[in-house]
Length: 415
Length: 114
Image (tube, rainbow over all chains, first blue to last red; front, side):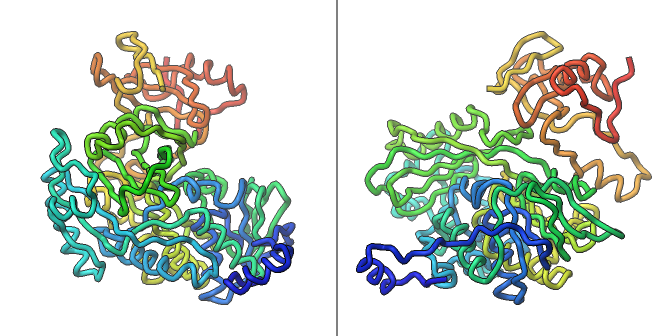
C-alpha cells in the first residue's frame, strides 16, 4: 500500500497523477480462510482490521452482498458520542469514540473526524432528570460530559429557539469530545488498511447458506461459490435475522426502517451536533453546508430502506419549532436504512448456538458511532473464542437471564 | 403511506390513524414455563423479510385491534382480518398465495380454525 502524504501528493502532481493505486484489491474468493466475515460495512471491516492489527490474524475474507459501506454505514447521520447511562454501553462507545480520535492516523486515511461537540437537548422534565443522572453516571465512568443550562445551550447554538411552546429547551447534556466523521471514508479507510494486510474484500458476493458439521461452522455458500472457514463472524445489521435463520437460530431483534434527510447547502450556521430525543430530531451541518437531519424509526417491521413519510413530517415539524430559521430550507434528499433493534436497545456481540460462529448485531439506530470499538471488541471475541471485557455483558444469553443493558429506559427512545 | 382497512369499521386508514402492535399470533407462556420459553415469548422474533403477520390498533378511529398480513420487503398488504383468531385465516393465506404460490406458514404458526 502506498502511503498517502503531502509528499505523495507533490510527487503525483509532478507526474500527472499516474502513480495512484486502487485503494483496495478486488480478488476472487479463495477456497478457504481462517475467518470469514459477512458484511463489509463499518463494523465488519473494523472487525477485520482489528483481527489483523490486534491479533495477527490476516487470512481473512470480508464478503459483502452489495457494495462496500452501502448499507447503514453509508446511510446514517454520522454522529459520534459516548454519553450512555449503563456501564457496559459507556465502555464500548467510549472505546469507539477514543479510537475515532486517532483513526485518520491509524488508517492513513482522512476520515474527517470532527470533534465539534454534541448536545442532547432536554425538552421535558423527565429528560432533565434523565440527563442529569447520565451526567453523573458518565463522571463515574470516566466519560467527559456535563449538564448545561439553557443559556449555555443558546451560546453554543445561537440559531436555537429556547422558548418553543411545545418543546421548550430546559437544558442539555453536553459532550464536547463528541462530533461527526465522514461515514464513507470510515468504510473506505478500513477496507484499504485490511487489503494492505492481505485480507480479501469480496463485494457482490451474497451469502446464501451456512455449512456446518458436528455443531460447528465449516464455511459459507455464496453467489461466488463455497468458501470454507474455521470461524465465521456475522456483521450484517438489518439482515441479521435472515443470516441467523440460515445458521439455524433465532435472534431477539426486529428490523425496522430508520430515515434521514439533508437540506440544500447553506452558509455555516451551527458548529455542533444537536440531538432532540423527545421529538426524534437530530441535526448537524455538513462540511458542504447541508443540514443533516435524522428522524425516528417506523413502528412496524420493514426491509424497504425507505421509512414512512409521516415520520419525516413529525421530525421536521418539531425541528422547525426548535430552529425557526430552517423553516424555508428545501430538502435535497431523503433515504432510509434497515436497523436491527433488540428488546433492550443494546447491541449483541456474542457466541451463537452454532460453534465457531459469532454475531455482532442489534446496534439499532446508533451503530456508526460504535464502529471502531465494536470492531476492536468483536475481533477479540472471534480471535479468542470467548468474550473479553468489552463484550462480556453483550451476550445473547442476557435475554434469557434477565441481565438487560436497558438503554431504552435511559434515553426514553430507541437510539 | 401505508394504508390498512380496519376490518372492524371498514374504514381504509392512513398509517397515522393506526398504532402498530408488533408481531401477531405469539403463543403466550404462562406460569410454570421455563426461562427458555419466556425468552422465546418475550424476545425471540422471526423477523421475516417477506410475509409478516402483525397486530394493529385503529387508535384514532374505532379503537379496536385487528391483524394484518403484510410484506416487509415490498410493503404489499395481503389482507387485514379479525383480532379474534389465533392464526391467519384461509382467505388470508389465499391472498398471500396469489403472490407467493409456494408460501407455507413458518414453524410454530397455525392456520386459524374455521
